[in-house]
Amino acid sequence: MRDMPGPAATGDRFETDVPARLDRLPWAGFHWRVVIALGITWVLDGLEVTLVGSLAGAIHQSPSLALTETQIGLTASAYLIGAVVGALGFGWLADRIGRRRLFFLTLLVYMTASIATGFAWDFWSFALFRALTGAGIGGEYAAVNSAIQELIPARYRGTTDLCVNGTFWGGAAIGAAAALVVLNPAVIDPEIGWRAAFVVGGALSLVVLLLRRHIPESPRWLMLHGRPDEAARIVGDIERDVEGTKDPLPPPSYGNVVLHRRGAASITEVWHAMFDSHRERAVLGLTLMSCQAFFYNAVFFTYALVLTRFYGIPAHEVGWYMLPFALGNLMGPLTLGRFFDTIGRKPMITATYALSGVLMAATGAAFAAGWLSAWEQTLAWTVIFFFASAAASAAYLTVGESFPLEMRATAIALFYAIGTGVGGVIGPTLFGWLIQGGHRTDIFWGYLIAAVLMLVAAATEWRLGFAAEGKPLEQVSAPLSASGRRVAEAR
Image (cartoon, rainbow, N blue to C red; front, side):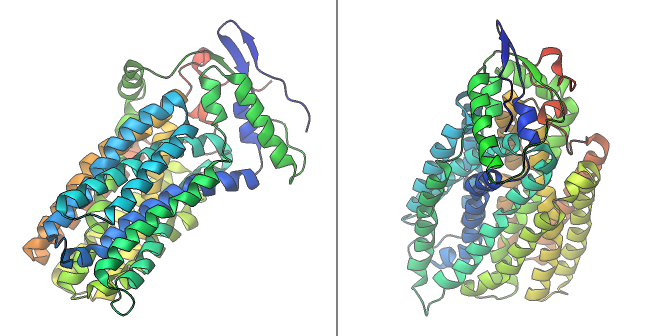
């Protein structure tokens, strides 16, 4: 590897090639380690959410808890409220103390709370532990999404981000398969089984803690916080790692970035960036996040209740129906992800949101009319969420790319919080109430609302979407500390 020049500094002003060096890297083992160690967050979230969905019937019938349908909907909302609070608090910290420290703190919160859920003794304890579990996962979303976007080369960023977010459904598939075991009376008492599922799921986090020991702090975060020498050293280590298995590295495709030393963005700067200089992107991010959150959480958190109440599926068999649904969601981003980097963000986001909305309206009408069997209903959901999964993952990608790097984690956290609060918390509670009423027509109106929201999001993306494919983060949204608020031209 040829030696790269270090950062040149004059007073509080310095010039760095860290972004260009990160973006020139070919895909290598380092990037796989980042994706696996950090992307496991979505697997854990999918595992948690699916366990609650698949175990809802068993928890409803549990002699020690015996939660009503409405209470189950409320505990789902408690999880999401916790995720909102965790995202805001930990996201704010991630922009101030770094991504790496938060990796460990948020994972410890998740692990402790998930294990504690297995020992809940009533509705209130169950809801509290679910809220704390959500807080850990919400914090992970902000810190981990930021780090992945900052460490992955620009030409792979869209594909990677969608695929990583899509692994939520790998966790969902694991949760659905696990439910088939822990709810089978021939294998284990369901009262013990559903509790063991939470305990084992939380304990698996110990493996993730070990994996994360080898992930460095984000060089871009260090660069933007006035530590260019440390950032350059880490990039050098990554380059040596990559060159150990690849051909000599190509020269950077663009020039250096000129920055001024500064700390994290203040609340005033965040507010100005979101609602003044980046107002259209704020509207876009809020719309995409809110609509997909309502769409997903309204259906997914209550799907087991639909199966048991309207199709007469025994609680211990729900996993068989969740499994293909989860796999369809997983395949969506894995199959479509690369097109967000080739065809482009705007056309792909618009298409996936619009298709999801149209298909949801049609399926909801078929459900209300009683035309579908349990397996036909599952097939319909699988097709819908093949597209919706890619759309939802793209919402996180859009928010992460929309704002300056100094406030990336805070922005992701804020929009995740608002979107989840508006769309996610209301959705499960509303649908739990509709299901308890026992009328298909009532539930259809809920599905129709979700469909309309996705079409609104598609129209908003078509109007306000922007091209970010293949571009460095510093060009998509110039750092607050950049000289001239742009990336320097290649020399």
